[in-house]
Image 1 (spheres, rainbow, N blue to C red):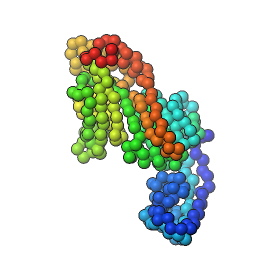
Image 2 (cartoon, rainbow, N blue to C red):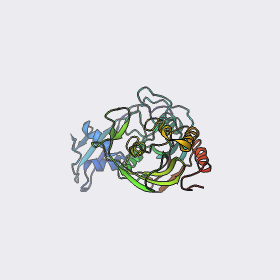
Image 3 (tube, helix red, strand yellow):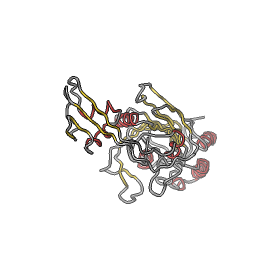
Image 4 (spheres, rainbow, N blue to C red):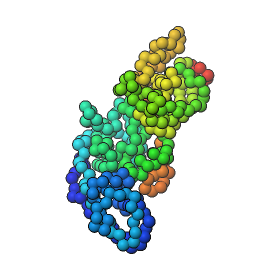
Length: 332
């Protein structure tokens, strides 16, 4: 299947035999298996009638005898072209898929980057994705940076997409990362609770900004090497570049980060500097990997949990770091 084709609009008619007390938006979201945001779009567009009269009031409570007619236009065809790009799926069913994304793969098309993305690959592999959200981002519930590898969930149906989005907002989707950070953090376990926004001085990147959006990241040191630490990371919010920005704000940027820590290790002296040079060479990319993902299936209610091992060259660099000596003996 290529991109989603234009289909005729669907008209749905509901007659209430008894008082439900439901809000109009909640009632339609449940009956049509759409997200509430999609239902609101239909209301605003004048495509919902109650007893023959168009209404845009989502909070209206339904009563016995009400007739609700809804016209659901076909989703506009996406301009994203399916492409036979190799990708690895950790799980798939008719509702969703879990992707183990390789580093270097952009998640969705953007200006100047229309092809060669994960969405192009998914449309070819799965044949279709949910229609919620922007046309260039079908199925995308959450994202990984281009240079970050690992697990992410994508939606194949609107029902799954809406429920996964709400679960993500309620922090019911657990996301765990592995990161190597330059230098040595002060504590074995710590939390960074600092707001993030566009860097006012360099708009192409993010920064800790007092007026930014609330951002919370939890860190736990797993191993300590000669000039870097291996950290387990838990995201409690999902801001752009959140892990990278929070570690940079502490003075311990992610190893191999071309935006927030380029050549940081060059300021180190003696054996530590030589070790850092070699480690940086062996890593060869951003040392950030989405290693764990857990959530309740939005349709079946099954508890799903996935792990992804460190890919190469990260795994090889980790093994070298252990052999080359550690600061506290961890990992040996």
